[in-house]
Length: 324
Image (cartoon, rainbow, N blue to C red; front, side, top):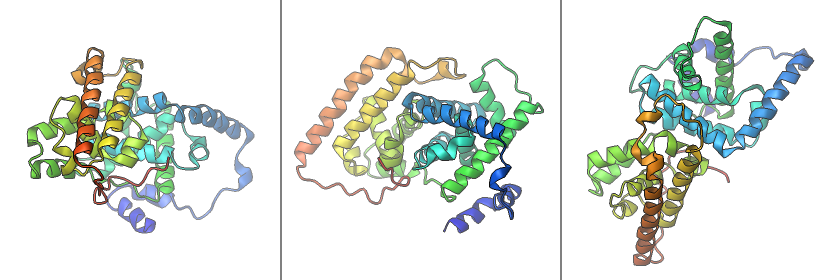
């Protein structure tokens, strides 16, 4: 299957990259200089530590969201990129795979892949992605695409892209979130304008940063329902409409709240921080805490009304299973 996915990925995209990913001659094991090995060790040690730091990973997802906003792409691209990012860094041999890359190389490669997978808008070339990333990483600085620094950056991201595609066996496509909107509007559990607004917030950086358990195990339907709860919308009809497990929904709400608390302490120099939704502002922290209690109360009441109910959500598969 991965060979089919590989050729589908190459069709109409980067044929040169695809051909280079299957070289006929591998370099000998002794071709790496001691200087290169030292550099790899330095990158691997520092960034493998960051990969185990929830704040660093959460910040990376927030930055991905900011870059996508800067590039004028859909929130779906942000979510898709973060899912690829989470899947890759949670592979069993993630530390070994990341020995050659900085954390930002991995997040940009994940974003570049998601950007090329979406069909809504013409995807951005790598130079454009790096330019938008530079604005987010280094606000106020000018990006020179012709500089040696930019060329080296391009090479690292392309190399990281090859590694991610190979490590995930080219299984980097995502079903998106339209099915969630269709499920809640089709069952009249929520009006379409409200559902679209809640989903846009569910795919924002603060929620994407809530961790791999949410995005790889539970999926977007739980993020959507939790955000609806934070917006003080009626979430009880969403439970049967999306086949939600009430206690899981309660736990997801806590994860999102914790993510917002952690990111509140992160640097506030991102390009569109001033435009973020008021739900994630520091002044609304107490309201979010109150709404967690409300969400828990609704979930508990639903559980009491339907004792012993078995939730079958097998038809709602958002991404490959997350292994805790």
